[in-house]
Length: 227
Image (cartoon, rainbow, N blue to C red; front, side):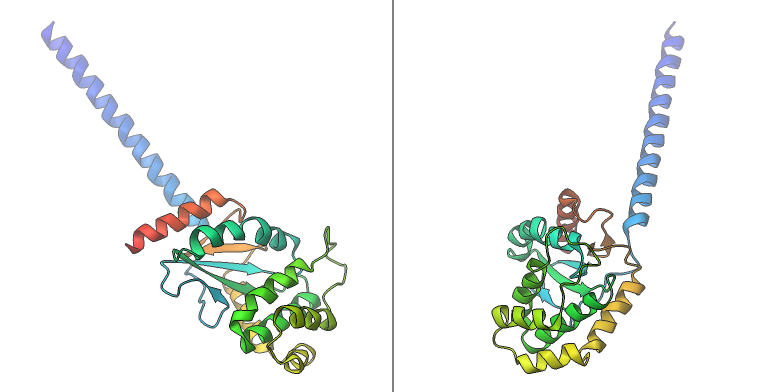
């Protein structure tokens, strides 16, 4: 009787160990798959890119965005303010913007203008950047034209008044900042940016840029690693 009881106990212990091992291996596999799906080759270089936040912040967040993109406008109005308040302004993360040209000529015009403003007055870039998105018409059809050199200069006069407006006009009309825009376009290709906005946090590309819980999780994970 005693031997039978011992056999039963041993069997139960062995079964529990096998179940635990299977669950552990499955969990490891799931984590590996998730990481493989979301991780990119490396984090995009942010040197010479418009960046806001503390330079030594442990977490780097990059937005690949397009001034003609309605989703980018929505992201800037709904997700970015929380991100700025909770992480950028508190020194936990820095945020960089890289131009995407998915919507053609107007995307390029806006990118040329933003690069000109950044080149002349990096601090004024962010107010101009926001103003361009704010000027995007509600319920915009991608084919509707609203980005023009005149409109961009008008926005700069209101939101980046200290820059040289003649230089801005020249940079827009003669593609004077095309070198910087082309570097951004190459990064879009290098990182196989699938849509806008695409958000990358410390080398991890979000499947859903509006998933704030995942954004917070990645930032907190990056902060812990740095410590």
